[in-house]
Structures are given as structure tokens and as C-alpha cells.
Figure 1 (cartoon, one colour):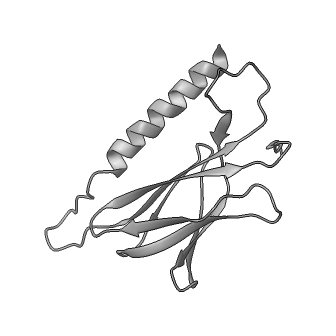
Figure 2: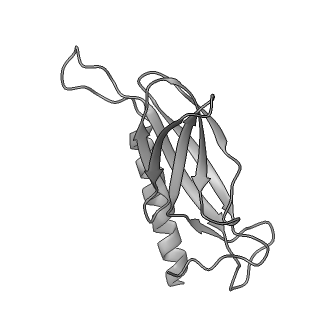
Length: 139
């Protein structure tokens, strides 16, 4: 029961953060440029240790390093997600690829193509694969 309550709060806080991030940034002065960038939400599918309902998956937020690259392959920046799997990075408008940076085969995820428009933060969600037998996230 405690786990369900924690997951519910994580979802509520995540949605509250998205509601704030999804709004255009307000500048203190009229001449200051507004910001744009990416709001990232990362989760990982892990091995389930309890009863799972049909049609559901066992996933949890993923804290890790992600690389943002331009379409020509040049690295733009790196960002770490927090314990809720969230990160925000300011970027100029353009098209970017964002992907997980790992030292081994797993966890892995296909890079996501993200279009950043002026004066907005674009939402990007990545779901990582923990591998055939799951991944222990205990460190």
C-alpha cells in the first residue's frame, strides 16, 4: 500500500511540474528573451517483484546521464535526471536527438528526436529497457 501511495505522489508531482514547465517562461523585463529547451522524463522497465495487472508494466523513474546532440552528430550538452527521472535543459530552437549514455549494453533506449521551438520547453519522454532479466538499480 505504501508503494502505491509513493507512486501516486510521484505522478502528481510530475504532472504538476509539467504544468509549470509547459507554460512559456515569463521574463522580468520586456526586452529579455524567453527561454526554450527540453523537459525530459525518463523511466525504466524493471523486473516486477509483485502481482502485476494485465496490461500494466513495472517501471520506475530513471536517474542517469543523457546526451543531447545536433542532427549532424555534434554533442550539444549532457544532462542528468534526478531521482524522479526528470531534467530540464535550456537550448536554442532547433532539432535535437536525446539519448541515454550508458557504459554497458543495458539499460538502453532509442534516441528521441525533439523539436525545440522558441519560448517553449518541449516535453520528451524516454523509456529505457533494463534487459532480458531486468536490471538491479541498487547501488
